[in-house]
Length: 245
Image 1 (cartoon, rainbow, N blue to C red):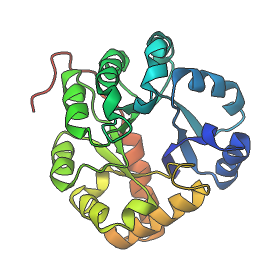
Image 2 (image 1 turned 120 degrees about the horizontal axis):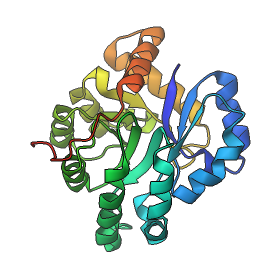
Image 3 (image 1 turned 180 degrees about the horizontal axis):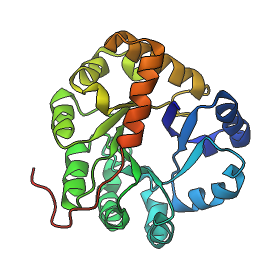
């Protein structure tokens, strides 16, 4: 099954209608959330939808609220198979909360055990995020909408991590260069709806088509590659002493 690995269904005007479109299309979706309270609130509404995977999130740009929800994250993380989005954001909006973001991330990473799919936000912060992932032995994870450049992408590939890409990225020369250094067995697709699109399924369809052109694969083969990648992108048993760089 094709899977949208990063979509904020709960942020749409009509989340249930969006979930229904994924179910009807038989396309999976990792529904990333901003806070643990959002994750908990969404669970009862998602039970009828077989293709929706709710993800436990702690968005770095919601760190002011997130400080009071660390214990809630801890209470929920054991039962959550999907985690996201978490990470750090040192763009213009996030710089002022850098220390808080770092403290929250360091608090929640030790709670993440093996077998989780983890979607990571790292805008202008990939080095710091990577350091903390290494420190807590969390790998592999999926870097969502990665903007860190070719060299940084190569370093993350060497550590075993994955990357989720969307159609907008694949229409950009900068991001196509990044995709060019990422092995096809480390690539996933995302819509990042509703922030990038109000039509997430169309975004996923277009991303698959673009990847097929880049890889020179037919649609069925492209979807098969992406499905296998998604099944493999799961955290291993944490390395408590950290990894060597």
